[in-house]
Image (tube, rainbow, N blue to C red; front, side, top):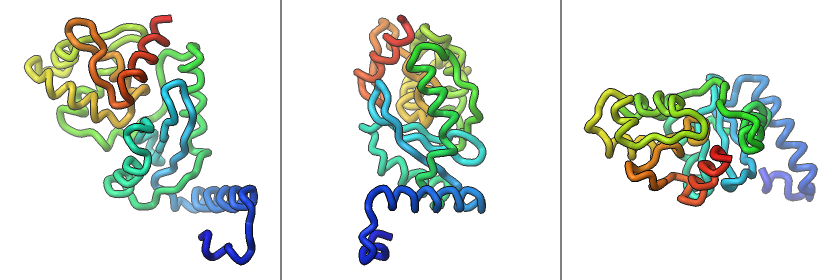
Length: 196
């Protein structure tokens, strides 16, 4: 698109207006299967993505936003467009969460990026209350397979909806935080936020 408009020398504001019109028209015509946007947060820039069914992906910057978009194009649909309006409700809830005024998320979720035992683990994460933690072994028991502690760790590491499905509340059995897809600092930030 840049090459097409180059002779016109559009400025950034014009390009933003044109993109907004394109996104609105594509949304109105049902041509956007995955809408995305980025937002700044206390745990870094987050990529947010939603299908018409609900929020489908939240990715930390260190996970690679381009990689996350490529995976969405491959696993969900190639019709991926930066169309921020669809994500406005999630942005509002995240702002409330980071401000300490929201403890749970109540938006529709599109859970298609997790299946099998991983999906079972993710389904139980909201049972760990705000400000609380549970061990990987606790979550394995909740998910109905007490011996699958490592698989719980894998499910948390590959959680496509971190923060909303609170894998940051899953810690090692000795109480130390353990690993996190957004990095250890992000996990500590979220745990400290909820402990305040």
